[in-house]
Image (tube, rainbow, N blue to C red; front, side, top):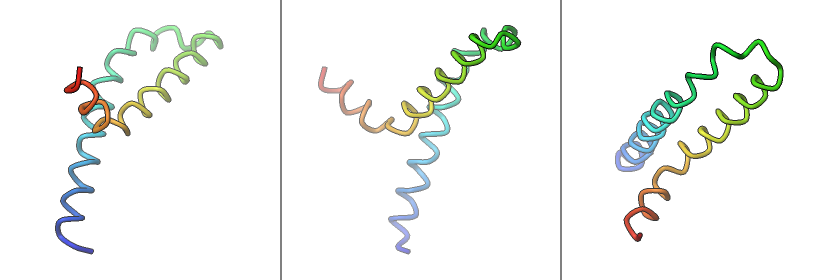
Length: 67
């Protein structure tokens, strides 16, 4: 594996982790209500959405710069 490919993959993963942590902090208010099934399901769906947003963070940077 090339060193440039390693740098690209590691920077992408580091960016995804940082984005995940930022988005996940917004959902902390639901943590105290997770004993209710509907809130637990909504929290799970929200975290899945945050994961998808974290994985496509380079695309969101490009779109934000064009606006």
